[in-house]
Image (cartoon, rainbow, N blue to C red; front, side):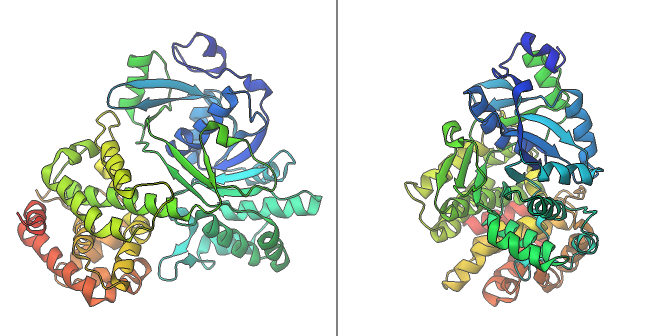
Length: 486
């Protein structure tokens, strides 16, 4: 049965129990990818099914040209889509109805007008780690980036998320309306702090007074979000049709695990998300450090050796003795020991849950997805742990090997000589540096926008160079065996 508003009553899966026509859009969300649709939107759908939060429906906002296809697909289905939650034992499908409109990327004026509307209380973002214009050499927002500079020169015709947020806040201030809260849901340490800097500094390019007003009046809560959500392909579209009887052009498959820890800083109001399972805390830092370093850092640790050895799925990587042992050793000896304590949480038990989630065969998560965008992810998920250990005088042998594996992967060929297709926005640059690093490791470590000063520390550069040479000479499996001592 084709998914649409008119067919909801006859679908053979769980559907919204609330009247979608009575919902009011209170959240403008940028970035309608699979993660948002299986995370924030699921929490809101839960809440709405409980009869709450009906004035906080989602208005989607496109920014990138690639958003046009997603908008066309979802609008054709009345902004409905199916989420399939999968454990190793079972799969459950539910139609999510929390989104009520999707504004086109080409219509910045409509997006700004919606941000300026009195009903809008929250502007939220899932724009990926690379969408925040962070200069890794400084760790701060780069206002000189051409896209941001263009918004600074043309504030009334913004093209970036941050330019649109500034324009919306400018309009609200002019109308005497309180500002909306800006809520990042991306996997970035202190994502609220990072977003605040991006919005304030974008505003400062065109209006210093507005920038100061934003800095003093707009809330940017930090949050930690977590759920594995693989990309949707024809495989998933066939599964939703064949297994559940729903013709959905844009379903989302996700693990059954879901977590959201959020600072309670919403002066303009918020939905009672604690009633849907969100944990509100005064300071999210311990949770985000745990997640980014143990989960996301763990993903990178298992992904690059698996990618070089031609392993396709993440659960298959977890079935490989070498990859799993490498992950165990790096996590328990180098990552977890420098992760700060988290209230009421056992870090080793958290890691065991991470391994269980990665081993779930139902998810179909790919190694290639975990290898994606290392130039933006490594400076957030891996390199800070290396720096922490160096600052404490601790060895970094395993993390140096992880970094060498990333370098070897970016050289563009697997161990068997097959091509690795481009898998990073900066792929050409990375490939050139990785190939040059075969004879000169500093060609890789000298990328200061990624490694900062860490790449120049001999305690890291030395083991990196040795492991990279071994990867080229003996291959991934032999290098892992050498590291593992077997």
